[in-house]
Length: 246
Image 1 (cartoon, rainbow, N blue to C red):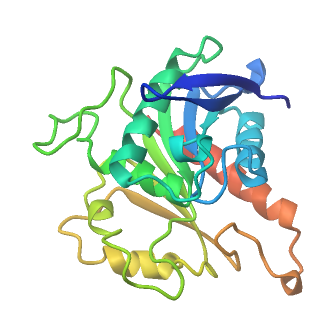
Image 2 (image 1 turned 90 degrees about the vertical axis):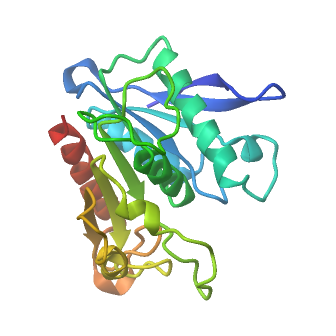
């Protein structure tokens, strides 16, 4: 599959690179996923492009994009409000891309990109409810039908002083899928469940554990499992989850 490269409007000083992965007409799930990269690599990293292509082959229209700091070749990510604003701009640009044909919107990403997607998801009221008092302004675009985080960075390895990455998860009312390896050094599925256990009400979070998977779902050779099959199974599960959302 050859993605369609295009540019998204950024701040007054820059535009950012993006790519569209379109499904075949006979597999179209009528769903668009705006998919963000992790902290250390841009949107053409093999993990990002591999999952974008895999999900497109399963019927999901996927748009990937660079955050502004990556476009400017800086190593240090921007602060969360800047990343959140860039993500909202990416949503608008993706929806306006002339080749996109989808009525349902999903937002998500790998690691940091998934965390920023959960920030946006937590700021929104349920699709059928009134806006929350502290909700951010959502762009002139459909509200997301779901949020997807591939490898949520609960706490960086060897450090537990990274700010609060849990409170907003407890506020999620938009259906959210977190795919997490059981060997993830940023925190496994059990640690995420433990972190959410004292939420005032159960958040709309569903966990998909990847047995033996690390932060990028790589499994040990000693497991005897084929890595390509592991990724394919995850992509099957994500596409099925997208399909069942309203």
